Length: 178
Image (cartoon, rainbow, N blue to C red; front, side, top):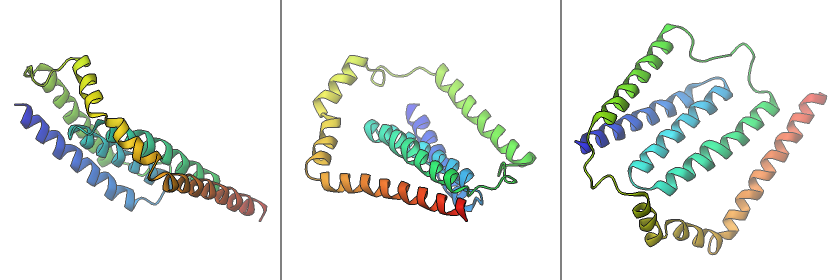
């Protein structure tokens, strides 16, 4: 039974990721596009977590859906690329109906999973999960190469983000004076 729910969740989050990515590309408003990109990132994080890549899923949410999108929205707001007449890309009854159906499907899935009995092999204690992570050294295996072998790429990425923010401020001030 859990395999069925795993497959349903995998395909559900895969479809949400694909639909969100397509919607991201087709939006006229950059703010709405950024929010659809966040939806894509959360769906990908859910898929990573289902594949037992918990650290990668957490990093997906923290770095991409969190920090990068905040920087992106900051630059969009600074450059004032949004138009006040585009308050929402999902107007009308069809957007609301689709959102309602998606909400009902997710609620039904949560209620079904809450009623089902999980086999004991899937329910491990918190200490066992921590011991497994300690044995695998999941964070250390990612952090050590990042901060030793790839430190130059890591630092260059931070400098690139700083240059992008400074460039956005310069462009924003230039436009304000014109």
